[in-house]
Image (tube, rainbow, N blue to C red; front, side, top):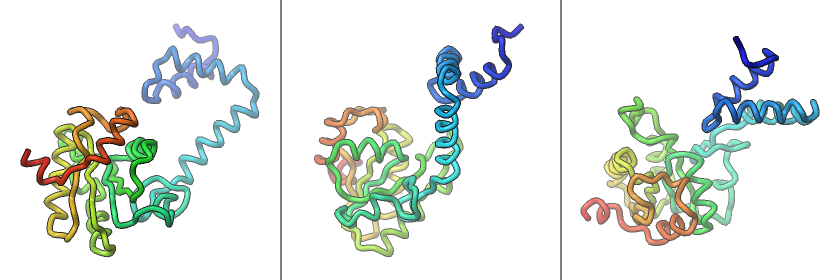
Length: 206
């Protein structure tokens, strides 16, 4: 027998609990909060979520999420367009931007190589990165990927793929602990790891 007196409430809780980090108790609390609010407020929330899902696209240059064909970072004339920072996803872009220590452009892979999760090189935007290096005067590529086995594997794959270009390949310093995701690093630590980046070959050869 259902503990809910309303099937509609139960359905709302079911959907909210599908969100990451949201258990059924939290989902119920959120649903009741929405139920107590005005219909107008709930419709605004619903409309904004639907619009976000339908209208957000990926930047044709860096693969970052964007409202336009080219994202605000790539289209900013104040950014240093000869330096590309390679990251796993949008959360890493946001984390690095919060440090205010990087003024170049980004390249969002859309994930990292992970055979366990069925993610291979063809699932990521490596070819787009090579295309950018071929068509633009890039002086440095910074590998800012997680300090995990998967992250290191992806960094090495990129290094092998772009090492013949006349470009400096660096990696962020290991101020970020082994096994850490960039989005969870504090801003000071992440900022310092970008400033103190080192040549990738030196990092690999110890």
